[in-house]
Image (cartoon, rainbow, N blue to C red; front, side, top):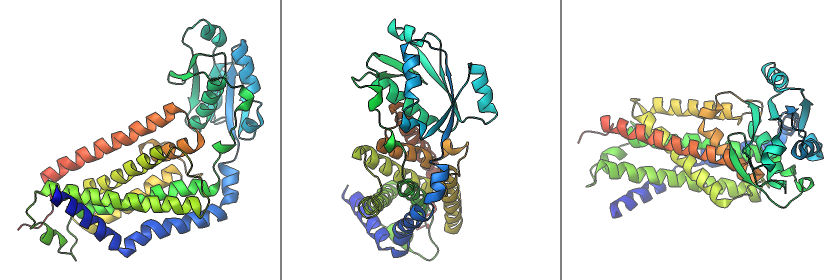
Length: 372
């Protein structure tokens, strides 16, 4: 254990002394947040703040259907969405297919009666854009409705009732400012660069004899790898915390939310980044090749998640760990539904298991240390 702690400590110390990489991981994203957070405010207003086209089919003539109609007239909702009503579900589905609306809300017939009778009932959401935001609105409505004990929204997630009126729902905080948006997206994108620490654990850099000297220590290769791995993850985590504190107290970016969700998400993402480096290092032969792959992943994951511009969205963003970390961070700041948060947390956990499982198998096959 003492040897493991020593390896962790010296790996952390080695990384923090690398001024160039530290500057890239900390100073560079801070400058980008400062520049884009102010210079692109108009783009953000036109795209992210642009009203979301939402289709609405309400076949329920009971009290819930009536109150949901009133709920959609709330100024905070009309400022953010553009509701288009359709007579039936088929018309709404065609509107999605034609790109007329991004999301459709379907309230089935006799919803109020079924809920009053204790029968399970579901509201269906259709679409692949802005679904998280719209689901959060629906969750807010039903958790505010004092006549409902439980209702399932989308994937049959039960939402408890609260003694609040619909009119008291405030949605202003659901829209981040540009500085808030890039504060989250940039740190996630830049942390991908931290994968080079994982690459360096597996692949010897030609200009360094660090592997040769450290590998002579009387310690197993797995303790050596684990120590360097934890030291690198800890370094990225500390860099992230410094970045968040500067954004929060200097740039006034919104990082309010459940502190444990924020810290857990950041720590998990740091572990994913270093783990990706380990995995890359198991199937490339040179450090430079690994570095190019890391840079490509940084650009790819950031682009499909919207780190370059809020308009950069993609149907494949679900395969990006940045996307799920973004959902968790924005979710705790702006009140996303529990279902969305749990799904993203499971995705991050799945990435960790998959990446480290594959990395361990790869390192068993070959570790590119010098033969001593």
